[in-house]
Length: 305
Length: 203
Picture 1 (spheres, each protein chain N blue to C red):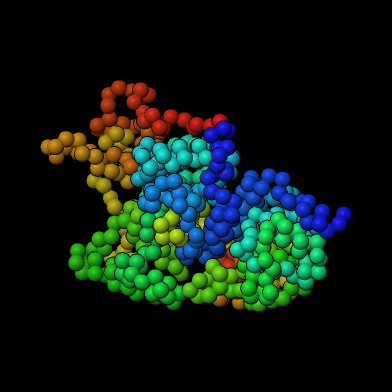
Picture 2: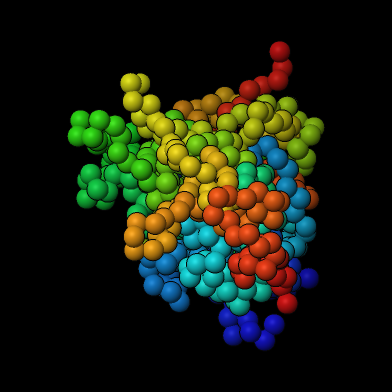
């Protein structure tokens, strides 16, 4: 406990937490609406998840189990450092196992393992305003949300079709929440959009630099925008994961050499490791048994001290 | 006990963790309307402010949030000084200025549209009402639907405001503007965010 003595629990001071908590409650009451909040400086640069960290810090308690993912992976820099941050300032248990986490902070993926009621998914959001690249003025976008004036977004998707023959947006694909607000699902691949629809988990979104918090309560309609003749569809992959042979999951391309060699592997490392532990093997999976070569970050739950 | 002592006693024993526990209960209740979240009695405010409503005020209110008290609470100097000491929240002059409203006798309360509804541009600037109810089972059953509810949920809060179902319909029509309600019993809370639709069960 000596490590956390110099900080308040979970780093933020109590007045900041109250302010963020009030914003979260309003966000839940108005699904998809971006609630302004007084974002604080955090001990990490903007763009590294300061919004998500502030949301997590405001909701986390000593009994929570935290998982942090970065593009689906538990073992990349952002995920490791945020997990270490909360272990240090809140002394909470951390895990890489999706099912046993109570709070999952994510940068741009939704885990493959289905989320359950009682779990909270906290997104790190760089640009919360889905209309920002179409209309740079905050005063105008705010009015567009107020008047439910989303024609411009459909024009943008239509221009995609006119140019490319299909809707070319593949990430940060705009959604409509409960038939009212158009919302940026943060730059998750559109592959994950259907998982947001009527998810049993509470989804909270924090944008630190842009100072916005928004939310999607459980069992809330989240519909990706599309056209009758160009319906929304997710990415498909023509091969399974090279390590665990999983199909219908989101895959990352990994370059193997400078002769064009590459492989596709699960972006969700926890999901991939669990499948390999269960004996699923892809065509590039090493021959040796996997116990010796799992990711160091992925072992078990690290309990609070 | 004199008022000075009364106003100092009865706050959170462990401010950081008690506030977090109370907030998580409110957050879960708001995210799952109609579910009843247990709330331990962390605060001991002067009567007639209930322990759970007092705890919610301590967890969420501070000098940024004007607070409105209904006439029953307004009459008590002890309550005003207890809230003032523990939260620092200023008292709102009118209900329309309030971020939070504490209501001890919902059956006699003013209509919901008297509170701040937020604006079309900033619907979050509306009042959150904290209503004392004696229980959530003995009143008129309310069938709830909407975000946060898988199919439907039922609560039957006692002593609700007059013509509540009709008033709530109007509140929903104002969406995204509108008030949100936290129902506080002695040992638990339930929430009605502005998105929740009510169907009365009486056929």
